[in-house]
Image (cartoon, rainbow, N blue to C red):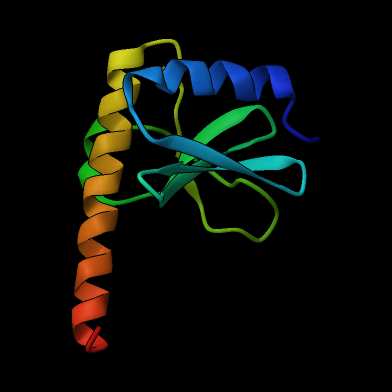
Length: 108
């Protein structure tokens, strides 16, 4: 089942407290970016974010976006904009730190 455009629009609206949210369609689903950093996606009308240390505190259930994929966290409080904003910011904080560490190890 692909994500509906109505649900995509709803999630993008809910993420409205953050500047620089973009999305890219991918095989009927949508990848989500904050300031160019991939942090999650919309899969089968569900918002999922990458699992990182800084977003564990939200105690979100794990879910698989599609068959044979790594598990991600399912955001169940999509109607709470402030909490949603904090989840995205915390997720991206860890992802940004991982990117810096990898670049430093590779000499970039």
